[in-house]
Amino acid sequence: MDKMRIIGGQPLKGTVQVSGSKNAALPILISALLTEEVCDISHVPVLQDIKTVLKLLNHLGVQTDSKNGKVQLSAKNVMSFEAPYDLVRTMRASVLVLGPLLARFGQAKVSLPGGCAIGARPIGFHLTGLEKLGAEIKLENGYVVATCKKLRGGRVTFEFPSVGATEHLMMTAVLAEGETVLENCAKEPEIVDLAKMLRSMGAEIEGDGTETIAISGKPSLHGTHYHVMGDRIEAGTFLAAGFITGGAVTVEGISPEFLEAVLSKYEEAGAQIERKENAVKLGVIERARGTDVITQPFPGFPTDMQAQFMAVMCLADGASAITETIFENRFMHVPELIRLGADITIRGKSALVRGKKTLIGAPLMATDLRASASLILGGLAAQGETWVNRIYHLDRGYEKMEEKLKLLGAKIERVSW
Ligand code: EPZ
Image (tube, rainbow, N blue to C red; front, side, top):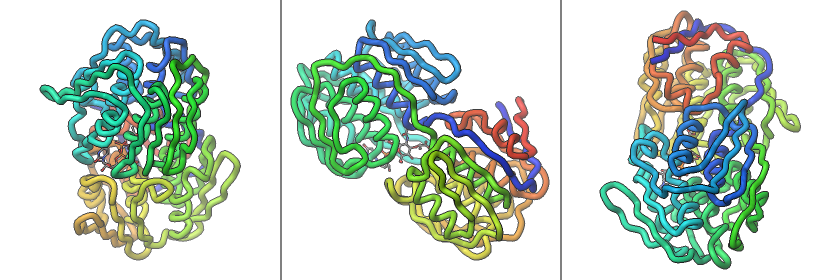
């Protein structure tokens, strides 16, 4: 198991190119199931979660060829409609194969994903929506068994603006007969990126990025070439690295509008932010100020940046109330940050962070993807040596993180154990 060794205290300076967005690439790759023609997807990050979803697609019979961030997929010869437990449990976005398999082949058997470190992660909104399009769904031995004669368009109103459920219904309704209207949709930029890719395959979708999406189903879709958007959470994480170390970091390959809630919170906390066409620069002229945050669906402050922002606030002047409203167990970075000397108290959905002048390096344990990033950030700012264990969590969502941080002047190395 790899660990990360960090010697903290270096202000990070320089420019980082963000990789393709993990959370856009996953549904985009799965959407290749919707056509028998070839899909060429570029700017795909080289990550464990991507490898897992490609393994699942291969298991279904999709031919894939990956090289230097380009993936070619052909779902001409799909011969299995079953997504097994051992693949789905390691990467829960795998459940998104259910709708496309139903839409194209009328049948699918997909393992329930089970929970993960940050929460129960149910998929009831997905299944209710698919039933509204005519799917017959049964739960058997931990699997979702779905059949349909022909999916028909319908009206689906989500109980909560779920990212995955919005994506799932979009990726299914594009082949359902007639009109579908999705209401109370999630508006994340990754959903717009997926809609753009589906339109490039001939799908008719309007309203993506708003709370109401209208889809006119087509009998079939064709192949496409598509370039995945930049990863806005990776971008926000590297800006946090510049902020927590008192440096100056520019992230390139991301539109500031996709991170506006985070950028304005960094500014409220005292950072200097320069917004460019396809880049953002963060500079630090004074110690961060304590700043409150409440995570919300887009365009609110993203839950995927909560742990990273908390790390920055551990060294702020003053207190910060950080409230997590999206997931029920997303504070597992807190006890580890406390091992660095942070002063954090959890009260229900909120964590009260009282800023300290310094953090002291210590051995830490990563528990989930964004918590791992938060611990790396803490180690970059702490005095002395920090070890972060179980960084396979980090490798799920950050491509070559230590190499990019080294380019910014960080003293960090991956140690294989
Ligand atoms: C996506 O997860 C992202 N993952 C998550 O990123 C992100 O944190 C989340 O959206 C919120 O932005 C991918 O895109 C692969 P949701 P998803 O459905 O789709 C509840 C990361 O770090 N819910 O919007 O699973 C759910 O339990 C990951 O990159 C139901 O109750 O998130 C949660 O409390 C972590 N029933 C809330 O809704 C359902 O059927 C939001 O979940 C579906 C969701």
